[in-house]
Image (cartoon, rainbow, N blue to C red; front, side):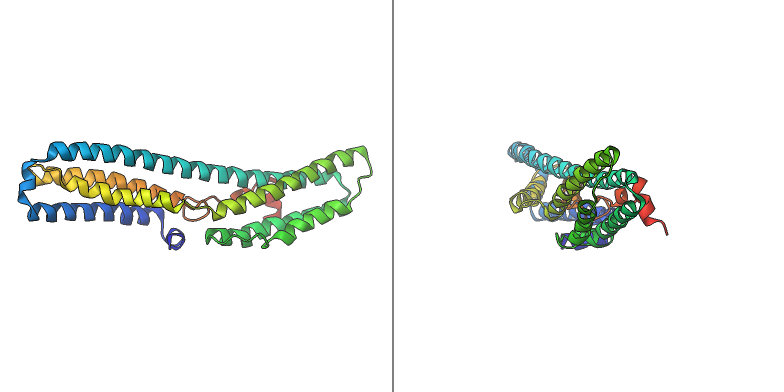
Length: 263
């Protein structure tokens, strides 16, 4: 369900629904509780409620900060892996310039097939949260086959051949890391802490009584908006290949790899 929402709605729409919905529910709950128990406006229990809010708020803030930093680090790591994989593919294309024209053409054909399979076939699978190791395994094997069939004739060719083999091995490792990252999501326990904590903390703000209704609603709305925005960050950062803030396949289309996308 979360993947479908991320892939079918903009971040702005999700922000309006998440933050706006959280604020609306919190304000409505505060008004209803105040009408049901008018004595809350006198703030007779504010000392106890304030201490409880402070304690829960500190614990919940630490949990949210940990979750958001972890997810942001995961997104940054995924972007690094993708960029490194694309860089290694580009380096093989440059190394192949030292090979005889027929071999170079075979290398280019194999690399072109690989980058197209990554962008056109693997990326939609990763966006849907269903990465497949077999989706382009044959395309990567084609690169191996070309290099394994080639025998360097000169010292210059041998140097670039060794570099190309090193890079293709790196591609295999980074491909596996990328597909593994596409399957990752926040553990259920942390999801329960992040979203369940909001269910506990926001209603506590209803109990903090203030004589003026507008001031109390401003207090409740501010706290719930901050929590709603934090939950939005958790939601959009949880899947590195889904949504508007997802990792882009652009590195596979740029630089030395742009030649494989020209019409």
